[in-house]
Amino acid sequence: MYREGKTGVLTLETLRSEVGLSESDLPFLQALAELIVINVDRIRLLQQTERAKAMEEADRLKSELIAALAHDMRTPLTSITGSTSALLLEDAEWDEKARAEHLQIIDEEASDLQTMIQDLLESSIIDAGLLQIEKEPILTPLLAERLVDEMTRRTTRHRFVTSFGADLPIVDADPRRITQVLRNLLDNAVKYSPDGGLVVVRGQVTDDEVIISVADEGIGLSPEHLNRLFEKFFRLKAPLGQQVRGSGLGLPVSRTIVESHGGRIWAESQLGKGTTVYFSVPREAAAAPTQED
Image 1 (cartoon, rainbow, N blue to C red):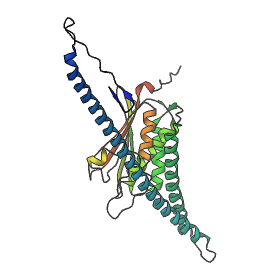
Image 2: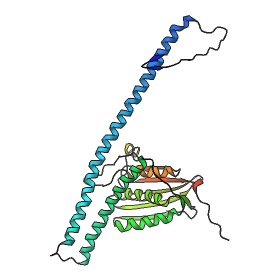
Image 3: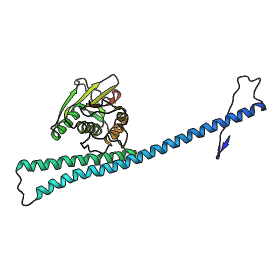
């Protein structure tokens, strides 16, 4: 078979060696070969079409992301500029409470900007195949407690609870990267539960994995959005009349980090009833507990 500079070979084997193939079989075999070529071409064309559609969708989402980031970055910059200008007014006299409020605005908005920029940098590092994982023995409950303390200072509308079993082992993992994953999950839990509520961080052990989860009482996800939650450039739309800022890259980055540890990440959600995101580290990567003499 020869088509468009490519040669294909059709190999046949008969179960009745005493009969074999004759010239009278050639027309049928040629027709069969043509059908195979047609189907191969059709499959190749479908694959090319799917790749083209995927690239178009990625370009569209990337354009939307850039536009959204430009808007999202403008908002905290405006707040930072406004509060800074107010504090620098020579004729203005601020009491300690008002000054602290302005400084808190600057701190919170700068933190949001830093998170968005960090997500972009991490995404670029991952795309370039340069993500590095530096493992060491860590206590995930300790990491979670530190992050919960940090989040408690940033929001008064949410209540945070941590729940880790006493049997949770020390894990051999990259502390900076696991902290990054936990921070992304906590940030999302706060962002998508705008009315406040409870955020619970849990840790549990199975035969094969150490599993960490972050559960909120927020807006929840529809099944179609749940299936796309970890896609790059995908951003969940905020409820009507509310604004949710972010790069849309935190969860895809988290997925790569978790998978680089040999774990997995997934979510469970019901629309209007909150979301729980889980990630795991294999038990094989769990460090053996230190034996005291």
